[in-house]
Length: 411
Ligand code: ATP
Ligand code: MG
Image (tube, rainbow, N blue to C red; front, top):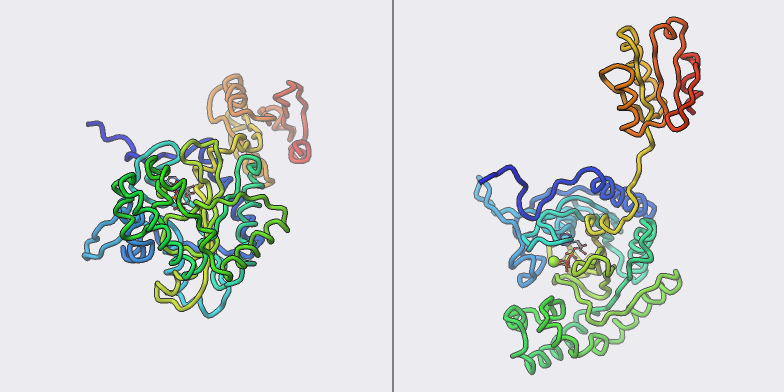
């Protein structure tokens, strides 16, 4: 078997795709930093319990998607499948509770054993934010606004819709769960095997199922809204009003629950119809119980994460780099000078390409191949007079300028 290939569900990112992914992360970083978020880098692997205890033991991630392994010391470790649990682990182990609120963002690879398809990889990149220590709905508004500004800055405001729902507080969730279970039991025979077992352990997750038979049942399930208590309703209304106030459009989606156990109150997704079944590009919500569950005291949290590859696929324009200047020596004596000129031009901020070998004609061809805008041609005779030729490669015109004037001329 030919082993010179990447593992199923993993990809080499280079060229245009890498440039796009880089742009997504650069735009994201610039925006969230304006809101006061600072970057954190947590390890790519954690003790398995960090995920298995906190993402919910019936979640898809924990039941079938984690890359777990035992290290040489016998510890059970897991390649992170998502960012929140690791960031909250760091928040607690680094004692960050002392100085609330804490605003963090992260980017990096995540690992899930999934069935690979377009927009669904086994190693993928997330860019995400976590805001810890703010209980009020103002945090929800700000965090969603930040996600929206991010999407807008990528030129995707017309492609992506904000969907939002509230899961309410614990009392509301419990009330809803009871109604839902009663309804699902009436429809037990129509459910998928997975959902039958979810019904026992975490019925809310049936709402999130991607199986057609489950979707048909879910379509007529009781609405979450009707189970929210007054406090939860008021919280949600404040969030929606806040978004209205900022002119951010959203769609209420009563079926929206998130796949993980730790969410409460606001949950939201940014979705597109341009990526087939993998239409969610960004997802998040409030997780008021998570920090406490992980042993870190009563600290509320809210955050989101986006799939960098999915967002990159939506970017139409390649990000073009500035066209380079080609530096071309003619004759052996000019070679050394060419290196020095290239060095100076780069220090002055130009992108410079050198055609490293061949005669003038061959080197000019290389300059055109890299789409150089101008060529600085260094001939031995001119060099003796302290001059070089600058050729405009679009127009074909050329002129001789003093070495000391090259930068000014190129500007
Ligand atoms: P899905 O419903 O598509 O499986 P999810 O609910 O599992 O998504 P989250 O855990 O919320 O996804 O992750 C946040 C974002 O990360 C998703 O909205 C998506 O853009 C991206 N993402 C999740 N899983 C993958 C994957 N396997 N490959 C590529 N991107 C992914
Ligand atoms: Mg998933």
